[in-house]
Image (cartoon, rainbow, N blue to C red; front, side, top):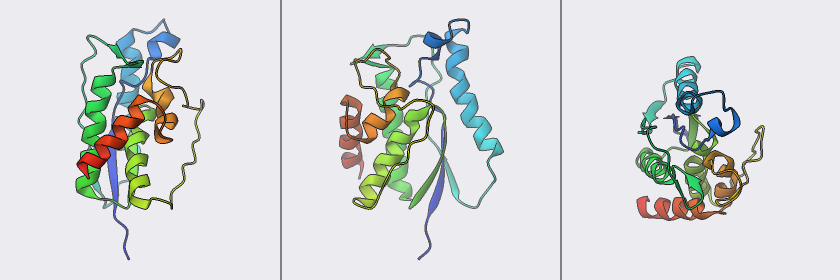
Length: 167
């Protein structure tokens, strides 16, 4: 049986609050690095015959709002829902994600966990563990990505609920 692989371009940058850690950078310059990284990955990754999808994302950085302990929560939810809708329609067996910050993995892993149920594992390799929760000291969702994949935190509840509603 042939497997269906898609390439998902996901330039989300809102999950990061880089300006907090690098105050010498302008907030928009720091955050846009994730967007630029996704575009560079798309350009540099070897071309294949698999279909490519791009998750719609907001470029508005005029006002960043924290809600329920997550910076830009509403925008992230909107982009998460768009990613889940793409995955539901494409119905891939495998996903190559070329993205922005770490939380772009959450909808993909959530989709794959639902598809493969008891036959899925996550091996997370990163410079930081990504296991913080809303309300912790850092409000960037990218640092909560693995927690969300494990079903912890308010955002995780949204992803699981959205996935069930889209499927």
